[in-house]
Length: 171
Image (cartoon, rainbow, N blue to C red; front, side, top):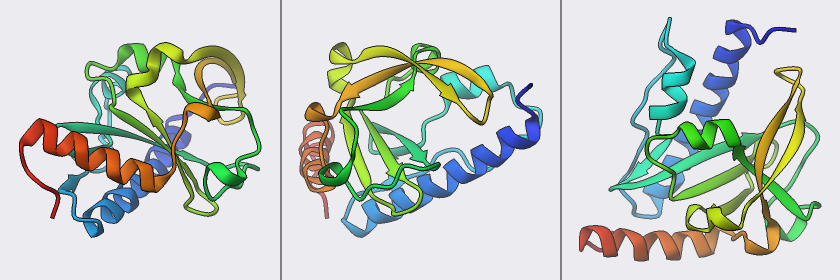
């Protein structure tokens, strides 16, 4: 079954909604978070979008937001039921011109967030997963949940990275 443009657009719009929600949470915490890409671009090359899109940017810090639906429900690391978590497809990650500094896995049901530090990419492993939307197996990077972080850690680390890169304090 081919992955239709209608399904792709729908997934894009759901993802974009979560990018805005996360950017708003960061703004409320004093960070200058922006969502640089707005809306679906009709006729866009998916390969180019994958390579160039940045979900949320805080100064020069790039965040990749992965909203997760389906049967998985979690509020954070404390109730995530699996030993590993999907980071990204290997194909998607390798195509990115600018690698994300952080991946945020957001539960669509609860808004819970698990943070994967992009600096740890060398510790990730590869595993195949069935994608029910695309109806195919995808090779993905997975991170051991023992190396992941919660929202509070993320806010502290993001503030340190922001100060280091910009010389500015978070408001």
